[in-house]
Image 1 (cartoon, rainbow, N blue to C red):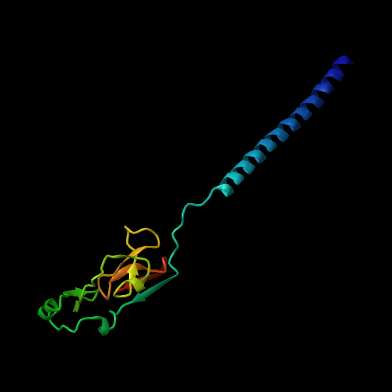
Image 2 (image 1 turned 60 degrees about the vertical axis):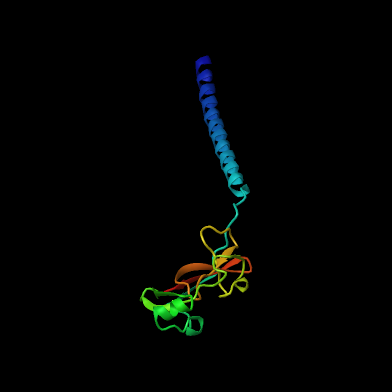
Length: 154
């Protein structure tokens, strides 16, 4: 009789021990989950650069009022311009470089051609004045110290 009681006690103790181990392991998993959740939500995001709000794509050069009237490379040189084949179609025309090309700016109103564009070397919210009235390729336009538009001119 003593053996049966002892054996019954051991079985009962083993069942309660298994339950105890499961509760402890579940508690550890819950604690780890809570710590990870707190860690992920409490980190401050690094300084974000504002994404452009819209993309403007054009396949035509800027209106002729922004270009030189020079019809040849010689006339262009006399005006102090650059005669090149511009854009993906390679249309040759003269563009006069601005006096403030490359000057630091935070808005197009600070530039003679009205375009302040970001570059790889400028901090967020700052740019440089465009060199030509028609800048080909893609770039971000800076307005009031913010990246406003992504412009692609072909």
